[in-house]
Length: 214
Ligand code: FES
Image 1 (spheres, rainbow, N blue to C red):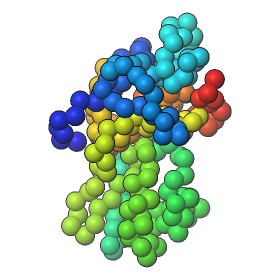
Image 2 (cartoon, protein in one colour):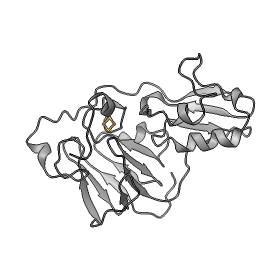
Image 3 (tube, rainbow, N blue to C red):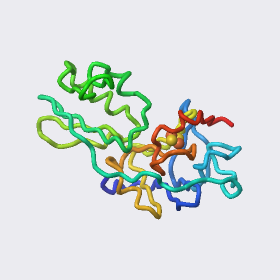
Image 4 (cartoon, rainbow, N blue to C red):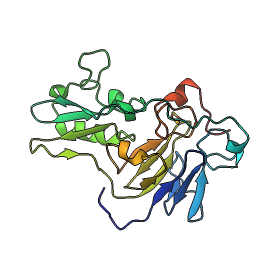
């Protein structure tokens, strides 16, 4: 995203928690936490004060390595009025798309995305915009791909899942993670510690039955 004059950022190293700077943070109910300008968020999954870091990462065996690298960009699924793009690497498999528009997004079909099935293109765009991970984007007949949907900088903590960022909060780390993103405006960070695509959520929190309240 172009410089919008906003200051929010998330900064970290491979061995540290996330430092959230100048960004509003809210829980899954939409209630805002009272936080200082800079606050540490847990990403090992072991803090007793989630979503905040309590230093436990230093005493547990947190595997901070990215296990799988991204090999290619998003794949295009063309329709006559709209083309849908899907970046599998960034997907966190929470099913906002398959539940939101099952006629278009159906994993039992090949291809699994069929934009031609959308009678209502506006509804399809709304469903695409609800995906928090940045895995979905679209283009209309002018061919310009739309990847940025919100101007409001915010960090939202999912109940037993990821940290969802929106509004163009800058991501700064020692592993060029921002380069992996398809949309620099919104993305989902892992906070359970189990993702193979760190720092991004890949849905592994389901497999480990991550409890974000503990
Ligand atoms: S929060 Fe860790 S994989 Fe989703």
